[in-house]
Amino acid sequence: MGFLAWVVSFLLSLFFVPIGMIYGFIKCFNGHSLKQAFKTLDNKFFRMAVSKDQYGNVVCEELFNSTLRKKESKHSFGDEDETISSVIGKNLRDDTLSIAGKVLNKILCFFQKDHALKAIEDLND
Image 1: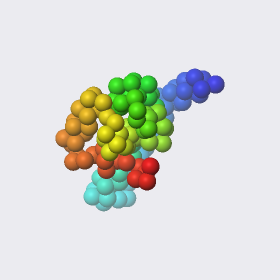
Image 2: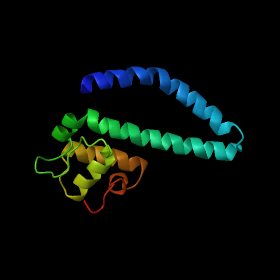
Image 3: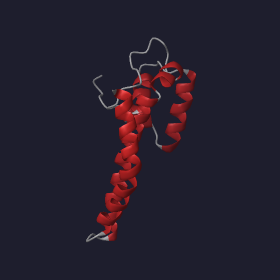
Image 4: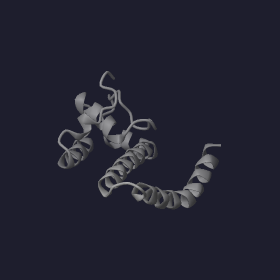
């Protein structure tokens, strides 16, 4: 059932994503100032990036659990409601990142200081 649901969602996304993107762009610029339109688009792209990140967390669950964290880690990849960066941040905080995980964290920090720590979704976890 899961595989069939994924195939259907994949096929539907091939059709609806391009149409939805074009429609969304037109809607952003229609009746809004250029500044407001770009602000709205920037927010939309950020939300799409987060959802892609969550998708990647599920898709690469086994790979990331094997390569980016130590075996004793309490924080695993694979939760569809969590970003990859959040899991990296939790493992960084708990000193359970592997060498590969530390390298990836440094790459993320190149783009935003303390990115993974800032991405931790539940600071009480």
